[in-house]
Image (cartoon, rainbow, N blue to C red; front, side):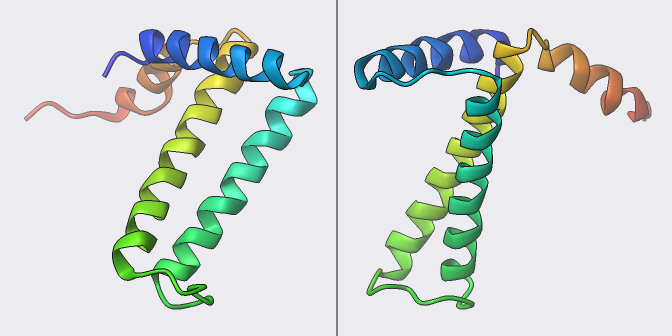
Length: 103
């Protein structure tokens, strides 16, 4: 997956959404929106694993919700990185892939 390209696409969509709704996306918004999405992921996980009320949702709906919330968290991480000028591909290579061992 090309994170740089994906980040650019997601930024465009988020920017249009914010403009349409009159949302100011400043440093605080990016952090709080990520936190909100993480909370939604937590709720979806708890419901999916039987640790919270399912609110009448089927197992299939709970699985779909969980997957969607994972995507939301990823997208908001990409948005925050883009906003702060962080190249996540470069940072992942530096922080994680440096530990990769050849086999």
